[in-house]
Structure formats: structure tokens, C-alpha cells
Image 1 (cartoon, rainbow, N blue to C red):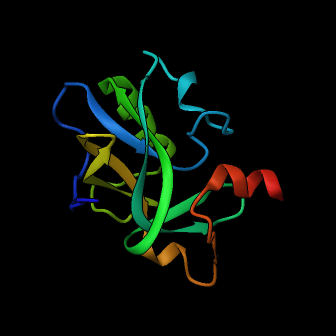
Image 2 (cartoon, rainbow, N blue to C red):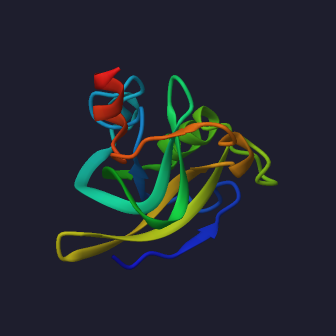
Length: 142
């Protein structure tokens, strides 16, 4: 699965983009992305290379490695992107709870440039790894 990442800073361009969600923003999650307006458009189920951590009420992913984290790709408008930045506590200097990354993901036969929110590495010390890579299944099993 091709995948590249880079830090993104805060939103600048005012065009729609894709976002990969893996935790409470997934369908059926506590913060289901469908509640945002304008309503995000579901594109595909997907997986990303990373390690998923249990942070209590929500997860965080550290990108890279051999593990897979399951999630969903959505097309979102700038208003939703701005709201997600607030929810994920993104900071312009990457010192917030989450860091915005751009990642190329495959879903089916297509590739998508996606925004993904990676947990700040300092937040995962001592946290349990979710070995299944699936937050929704993990949360349901609690």
C-alpha cells in the first residue's frame, strides 16, 4: 500500500479534500463525521500503516510501521476541515494534540491524497496498543 506523509500546518487552500478517519469520526462513532455540515461524502473504506493507541475515550494513530489501522475516506469541504482542526486540537506549530498529515492511500484501484490526524507522539507514552487496528470494534468490545 503506497503511503507517504508530510506535516500540513493549518488550512490555507479553500477547496474540498479527502480525509481519512479512524476513530470516533467513523460511521457509528461518538463524533460521526456525518454530523458536520456541509455533510461529508463517503468515498471508501481503507487502511493506513500505523499503530493505533487507546487514549481512553478516543484513539490516536502514530503513522508508519507494519501494522494496519482501519478507517474511512471522506471528501470534505473547508468548513468541515476547520471544524475537525478544532476538534483535534491542531496547533500551527504542531504542538497540539494532533498533527495534520497528508497521506496517499489506496482504496480499491484508486489512490487518494488524504488529510489524516496523527496523535502527537508525546501523548502515547504508556498507552495500550489496539492490536486489531479497529477503534469501532475495540470500543464495542469494552
